[in-house]
Image (cartoon, rainbow, N blue to C red; front, side, top):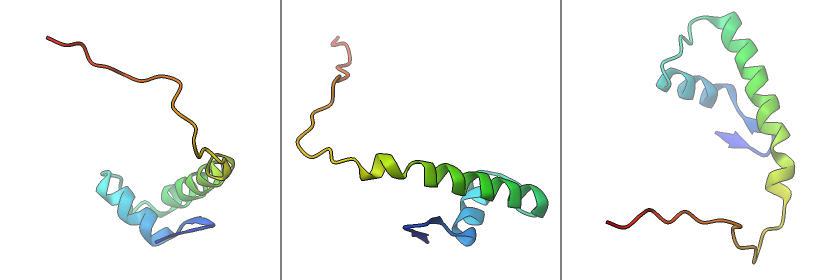
Length: 65
């Protein structure tokens, strides 16, 4: 499944197939997998942020009838 290093190929292939991508196109899927792994790794600083006790700056309140 997912690890600290990111997503493994098996999980990626299952998600890609569920999203309707042609997982049989190996060269394209290899390229896309590398891109997604890089993207997931770039999000690590966000995961490392300590947000305990921080309230959201904005909130959405739908209009009342």
